Length: 264
Length: 277
Image (cartoon, rainbow over all chains, first blue to last red; front, side, top):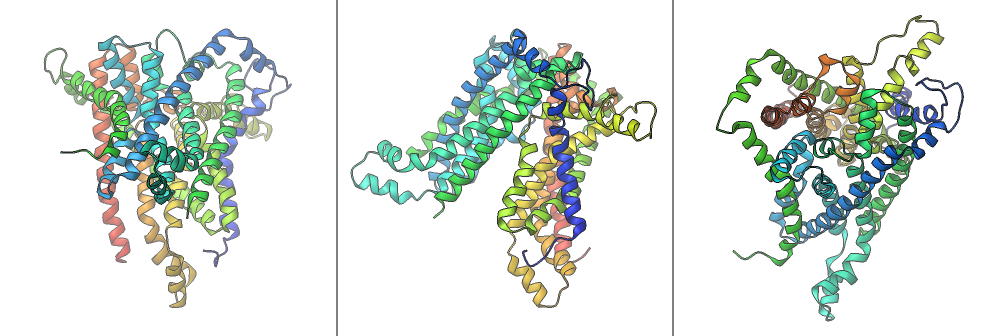
């Protein structure tokens, strides 16, 4: 399409829509540095009062740590299962590939509230409510499709003859995989793990249904937004916006690099 | 039947999905019709009361609106990115990806900051002398719609963009060589070729909208409740079987509408491709 030039109108339209998408997110950051008691824009005074309030409030910190713990466990589970599934998909016969991909990615199509309710009813019957481990597994099931999609795309780029050469030279199947296929795959796996981590870290509804005693960070934010919107939410949001942007940018760069360098 | 050794690697994933997706789904179906004996009373209640029908109808209507708005707004954006040189495309795509990565909870909160009583829009309106009293923007359908479109738009832009990069540009060149004006080449060659991908995006956005919970709850009023909110409300009141029935209806409606949209969309696409529009 390089033969065509975008009109000025289209260029303006593009930036308008980008502003519409990004502006509401950006605006939270100055608000989080306001020092007044109420949500106000533009803020009158700046300070780090609400960040201090967040870091010194045991309830907020406990919620953050719970989320972190659940997300780490969930990432381990979904990355392991998802990478293995990605391998199975990309190395299985052609006619098996799309049914397997559909099967592995089906949680994307199902509304979270449906999964949350189903897991909740099952957990009630099995006395598993309020278990961080059950929550981590449920989050892992929701995050796994992303891992499968990212890793299987990367595996398909790897030349299988290298692994075959390792086998011919006497390596066992596991060793051949570890030496020949795994190293170039690592950026994609790390990228997938970062995505999986944030799927769990951000998830609200399943946690809301399953957890009664302890709460995760999104549950804490949710409770705060429903009752009275304290400026601590702005500080938490500010932190999350920065952390997510950095982590996701790294993941995206890794993912692109994995696909680009592996391509023959 | 002998299973190929490589397929064993799929087993952990299958177990995870079986235990946390398939089994709970069956349990949910079971809970919706056994309470504790077989009964259809929950579904009857659902279809007899006007309030519940209203919520279902609204969920479909809002989801369709969001899907269509995202498509209409997003298509030209994807088109613009596709027109850029390769390197710049990557940078522009990042601008679309950044908001997409943000937590929906945070993005919804951001809209509270923008639309609240002392929010950005109200302060701006007052400063410019348009208003003396804050305008009520939170807890309206408009707020829900604006935020849902903002949240889902990046997904539609990326889907459209992916469809557009698949198009063989030689076809456009051929059309131009054969005498088509740029506008004609776009309308008769480029647009039809990108239609299928755009339709896929529309269906994805619709599907995601159907399950929206956070945004209608925080930005909408009572009149903006969607199925997911109704489910949560019923769970809080411990009406699990009724909530399960609602969950089943949500899933059936979502899948049913997807089939309908794909089918209807395919027909429309064929008509456009044949030039019958």
